[in-house]
Image 1 (cartoon, rainbow, N blue to C red):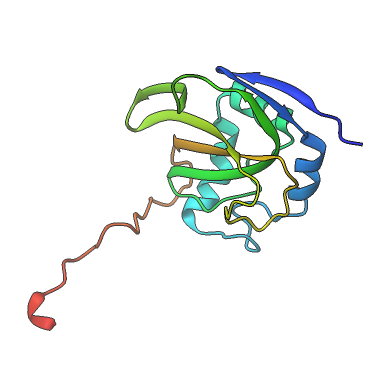
Image 2: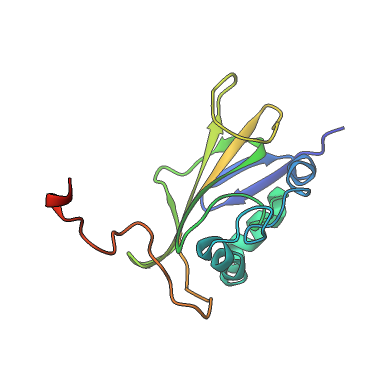
Amino acid sequence: MTEWRIVRFHGYTVKADPDTTHKLIRELPNIGEKEHCNCQGCSNYALATEHFPFEVKKLFALLGMDPVKEGHVTRYFRAENGLTGEILEQPSEWPVKVYYKNETDHFLLTLTQVLPNSHIPTHLPFPEPWMELYIEAYLPWLLEEEYEDWTLEKEEADPSDA
């Protein structure tokens, strides 16, 4: 039998099933491990979860989520994580600013309800109702090696080569 938990966070009130969520994600490899992806971004993210704001760590625990179980991440982290539950109330403005100092030092999140029969891509069989927790955060670089930004071209292509 499902044991629903009411969780309140920055204007959200959700009815969550942390046990089902935890059961769905517990066997996934950790972000940063070879079985998931051990690129620089993922490896750094796995270390950076220790630096998440306390209230975000608490939210993950209350919802049955593990921040190192889903997503492909970079230094500028964006991820959508599925969880079992339903939004009962939401804030008038979102994303929620857990903290926001500037463009390169912030942690934002949004919860959205996934509608029945929607075609949201997920590799996990979340039962209805389910939600997505969208996180946007700029994480500190904690790896010893220098950050390589693969989104920028290192050299401009010579147009005469075309």
